[in-house]
Length: 141
Image (tube, rainbow, N blue to C red; front, side, top):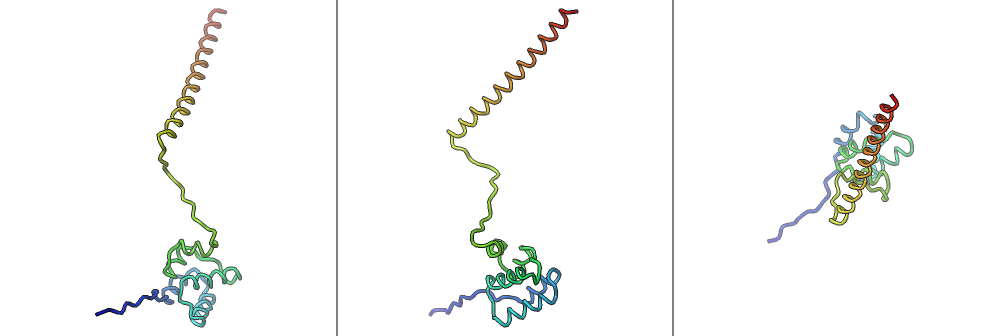
């Protein structure tokens, strides 16, 4: 016996949309967006985002925060960023750490030791010069 599996996208909750954006978006503009959504039968999060983006570009409203839009439409914030910024948008990851290969580690160790050696020799040279100055001053007295 086979079961009928219904694959459908979750329905857009217009009440959640309204409640989430009511403090951010002007009431009149929110009503206009709601009526456009109902008239056009837009149910997908992409369609809703595009409609809001169009309203913002036409200066009917200011862009709400991406996280707030994602919550109102019930989609992910990266989707909001992708629609808003275009298909070429990619979030750059800031890497905190990086694993080095043994050869890279050896090369960086050599550079660090060279820097330390140079610094130590410069400090030693400066101290030697200071001692020589003190010796010369004592001889003059």
